[in-house]
Length: 184
Image 1 (cartoon, helix red, strand yellow):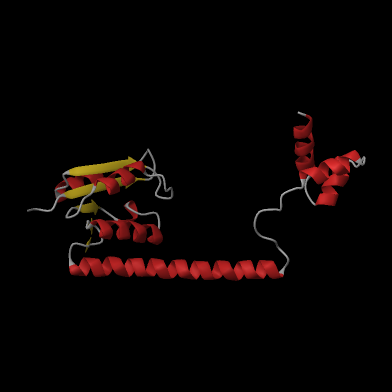
Image 2 (cartoon, rainbow, N blue to C red):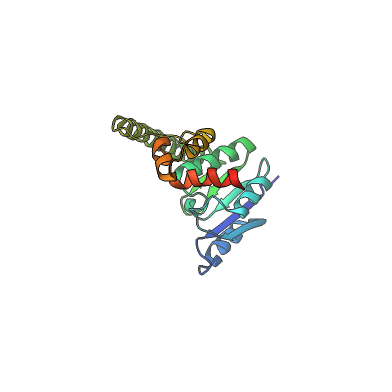
Protein backbone atom coordinates (compact mmCIF):
# COMPACT_ATOMS: atom_id res chain seq x y z
CA UNK A 1 0.00 0.00 0.00
CA UNK A 2 1.38 3.39 -0.93
CA UNK A 3 1.47 6.16 1.63
CA UNK A 4 -1.06 8.96 1.09
CA UNK A 5 0.59 12.38 0.98
CA UNK A 6 -1.30 15.43 2.22
CA UNK A 7 0.12 18.83 1.28
CA UNK A 8 0.07 22.11 3.12
CA UNK A 9 0.97 25.43 1.49
CA UNK A 10 0.95 28.83 3.17
CA UNK A 11 1.99 32.35 2.32
CA UNK A 12 1.98 35.25 4.76
CA UNK A 13 -0.02 37.85 2.86
CA UNK A 14 -2.85 37.89 0.37
CA UNK A 15 -0.55 39.56 -2.18
CA UNK A 16 1.77 36.55 -2.29
CA UNK A 17 1.16 33.56 -4.52
CA UNK A 18 1.04 29.88 -3.61
CA UNK A 19 1.95 28.69 -7.13
CA UNK A 20 5.53 27.57 -6.44
CA UNK A 21 4.51 25.62 -3.32
CA UNK A 22 1.48 24.06 -5.03
CA UNK A 23 3.59 22.96 -8.01
CA UNK A 24 6.12 21.29 -5.68
CA UNK A 25 3.41 19.57 -3.63
CA UNK A 26 1.64 18.30 -6.76
CA UNK A 27 4.96 17.08 -8.18
CA UNK A 28 5.52 15.16 -4.93
CA UNK A 29 2.20 13.37 -5.48
CA UNK A 30 0.01 14.95 -2.81
CA UNK A 31 -3.56 13.70 -3.15
CA UNK A 32 -5.05 16.54 -1.11
CA UNK A 33 -3.58 20.01 -0.51
CA UNK A 34 -4.62 22.48 2.18
CA UNK A 35 -3.67 26.08 1.46
CA UNK A 36 -4.04 29.43 3.14
CA UNK A 37 -2.87 33.00 3.04
CA UNK A 38 -2.19 33.84 6.68
CA UNK A 39 0.78 35.07 8.63
CA UNK A 40 2.74 32.32 10.35
CA UNK A 41 2.82 34.56 13.43
CA UNK A 42 -0.83 33.93 14.11
CA UNK A 43 -2.08 30.80 15.82
CA UNK A 44 -5.32 31.17 13.85
CA UNK A 45 -4.63 29.03 10.80
CA UNK A 46 -7.91 27.22 10.04
CA UNK A 47 -6.62 25.21 7.07
CA UNK A 48 -3.69 23.90 9.13
CA UNK A 49 -6.14 22.88 11.86
CA UNK A 50 -8.39 21.13 9.31
CA UNK A 51 -5.41 19.27 7.88
CA UNK A 52 -4.12 18.18 11.29
CA UNK A 53 -7.59 16.92 12.12
CA UNK A 54 -7.92 15.15 8.73
CA UNK A 55 -4.66 13.18 8.59
CA UNK A 56 -4.68 9.56 9.69
CA UNK A 57 -2.14 6.95 10.69
CA UNK A 58 0.15 5.92 7.84
CA UNK A 59 -0.24 9.19 5.94
CA UNK A 60 2.36 11.96 5.66
CA UNK A 61 2.11 15.74 5.55
CA UNK A 62 4.26 17.42 2.92
CA UNK A 63 5.42 21.05 3.09
CA UNK A 64 7.99 22.83 0.96
CA UNK A 65 9.76 24.50 3.89
CA UNK A 66 9.55 24.03 7.64
CA UNK A 67 8.60 27.67 8.23
CA UNK A 68 5.44 27.16 6.15
CA UNK A 69 4.18 24.74 8.81
CA UNK A 70 5.08 26.34 12.16
CA UNK A 71 5.30 29.79 13.71
CA UNK A 72 8.26 28.93 15.89
CA UNK A 73 10.45 26.03 16.88
CA UNK A 74 8.13 25.44 19.84
CA UNK A 75 5.09 25.44 17.54
CA UNK A 76 6.84 22.94 15.25
CA UNK A 77 7.61 20.73 18.23
CA UNK A 78 3.92 20.72 19.22
CA UNK A 79 2.85 19.85 15.68
CA UNK A 80 5.50 17.13 15.55
CA UNK A 81 4.22 15.63 18.79
CA UNK A 82 0.65 15.60 17.46
CA UNK A 83 1.75 13.96 14.21
CA UNK A 84 3.81 11.40 16.10
CA UNK A 85 0.83 10.53 18.33
CA UNK A 86 -1.36 10.08 15.24
CA UNK A 87 1.27 7.99 13.43
CA UNK A 88 1.57 10.59 10.66
CA UNK A 89 4.85 11.37 8.94
CA UNK A 90 6.22 14.77 7.94
CA UNK A 91 8.13 15.47 4.75
CA UNK A 92 9.85 18.85 4.30
CA UNK A 93 11.01 19.10 0.72
CA UNK A 94 13.55 21.94 0.81
CA UNK A 95 15.23 20.79 4.04
CA UNK A 96 15.22 17.10 3.11
CA UNK A 97 13.42 16.04 6.30
CA UNK A 98 11.29 12.89 6.15
CA UNK A 99 10.09 11.59 9.51
CA UNK A 100 8.94 8.38 7.84
CA UNK A 101 12.65 7.41 7.84
CA UNK A 102 14.93 6.93 10.86
CA UNK A 103 17.27 9.76 9.73
CA UNK A 104 14.39 12.16 9.20
CA UNK A 105 12.95 11.36 12.63
CA UNK A 106 16.34 12.02 14.21
CA UNK A 107 16.64 15.36 12.43
CA UNK A 108 13.17 16.46 13.46
CA UNK A 109 13.59 15.33 17.08
CA UNK A 110 16.82 17.32 17.26
CA UNK A 111 14.82 20.38 16.24
CA UNK A 112 12.19 19.57 18.89
CA UNK A 113 14.92 19.19 21.53
CA UNK A 114 16.32 22.60 20.64
CA UNK A 115 12.79 24.03 21.00
CA UNK A 116 12.38 22.49 24.44
CA UNK A 117 15.78 23.88 25.49
CA UNK A 118 14.80 27.32 24.15
CA UNK A 119 11.55 27.26 26.15
CA UNK A 120 13.40 26.25 29.31
CA UNK A 121 15.85 29.14 28.92
CA UNK A 122 13.01 31.60 28.29
CA UNK A 123 11.17 30.38 31.41
CA UNK A 124 14.34 30.67 33.49
CA UNK A 125 14.92 34.25 32.30
CA UNK A 126 11.27 35.09 32.98
CA UNK A 127 11.49 33.77 36.56
CA UNK A 128 14.70 35.76 37.15
CA UNK A 129 12.98 38.91 35.86
CA UNK A 130 9.96 38.35 38.08
CA UNK A 131 12.17 37.81 41.16
CA UNK A 132 14.09 41.01 40.41
CA UNK A 133 10.87 42.98 39.94
CA UNK A 134 9.50 41.67 43.25
CA UNK A 135 12.73 42.77 44.97
CA UNK A 136 12.03 46.25 43.59
CA UNK A 137 8.54 46.20 45.08
CA UNK A 138 6.57 45.53 41.91
CA UNK A 139 3.41 43.58 42.67
CA UNK A 140 2.04 40.90 40.37
CA UNK A 141 -1.37 39.39 39.93
CA UNK A 142 -4.85 40.72 40.02
CA UNK A 143 -5.49 43.78 42.13
CA UNK A 144 -7.48 43.17 45.25
CA UNK A 145 -11.21 43.68 44.91
CA UNK A 146 -12.58 46.95 46.16
CA UNK A 147 -14.83 46.64 49.19
CA UNK A 148 -18.07 48.05 47.76
CA UNK A 149 -19.63 48.40 51.20
CA UNK A 150 -16.63 50.45 52.39
CA UNK A 151 -16.99 52.75 49.33
CA UNK A 152 -20.59 53.49 50.28
CA UNK A 153 -19.70 54.00 53.95
CA UNK A 154 -17.02 56.53 53.06
CA UNK A 155 -19.36 58.31 50.66
CA UNK A 156 -22.03 58.55 53.38
CA UNK A 157 -19.40 60.17 55.61
CA UNK A 158 -19.13 62.89 52.95
CA UNK A 159 -15.78 61.94 51.38
CA UNK A 160 -15.26 62.89 47.75
CA UNK A 161 -14.62 60.25 45.12
CA UNK A 162 -10.97 61.31 44.99
CA UNK A 163 -10.55 60.86 48.76
CA UNK A 164 -12.35 57.49 48.69
CA UNK A 165 -10.07 56.36 45.87
CA UNK A 166 -6.99 57.46 47.84
CA UNK A 167 -8.26 55.75 51.00
CA UNK A 168 -8.93 52.45 49.19
CA UNK A 169 -5.92 52.67 46.85
CA UNK A 170 -7.97 52.51 43.67
CA UNK A 171 -8.95 54.82 40.84
CA UNK A 172 -11.66 57.47 40.93
CA UNK A 173 -13.24 55.67 37.99
CA UNK A 174 -13.58 52.48 40.05
CA UNK A 175 -15.23 54.43 42.87
CA UNK A 176 -17.55 56.16 40.41
CA UNK A 177 -18.52 52.82 38.86
CA UNK A 178 -19.44 51.36 42.26
CA UNK A 179 -21.41 54.44 43.30
CA UNK A 180 -23.28 54.76 39.99
CA UNK A 181 -24.21 51.06 40.06
CA UNK A 182 -25.68 51.60 43.52
CA UNK A 183 -27.84 54.50 42.30
CA UNK A 184 -28.95 52.83 39.08
